Image 1: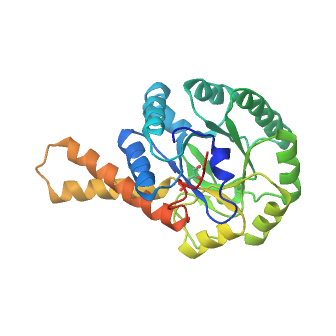
Image 2: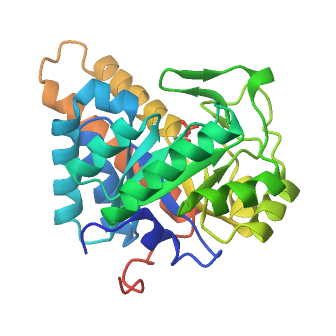
Length: 288
Ligand code: 13P
């Protein structure tokens, strides 16, 4: 099945289910994501943030992700998450990524449009899909920390214009989710999402997909979300699993047992998310 652009996968969702997009940092996390997708027969998007590139180095992490995609029995996209520059997007494209996200949502609109448009030109020339963002999602993603009063929901009128001017393949609106765990009940603006869905024809990506209720996820998909990003829930599962192994085996020195626990924690979490997003069993009917 191997490597596909994110757009190809997302266009198959038809508003009835969503593709899970999971942030990874190392070999065991990539394996956990792909093993889960294979066991659920679901398409999946592996996402590498700039922080993950800094941690693992692009050459190592791209080789791991692309090899996983090549071997996978289900369709896989490998995407840069929250790229902040054309240079970073170009490096990932050169490394073989099938999708990039460019996030200049904190810049003035004209600059966001200009840089996103340029990334689209370069990416499309290489057969790579592009996700762009407008509005500011709150919370913490890598080194990107957005204070509560800085978060800004997406204006549907401007969203329509942004998608048209940039030519992006996937649009990430800010509709009240935050990156990371919620400090209070999430205030999701479903009617704003419906409004954006009505005006924008490209697939919609939800950032801050962790720590939401099953009911909210189902409603977000019904209101038009096609891609759901999950990072924090994997980190929580991984750190809890490592803590548990160490607590149960205080004298243990076999580091491989930790790596196995990481892989299994990621796999089990991703299986749950894929089922929640309605993506189980969708791979074989995709005909890519
Ligand atoms: P969470 O860490 O809240 O799951 O958000 C992930 C995300 O949106 C990555 O772009």
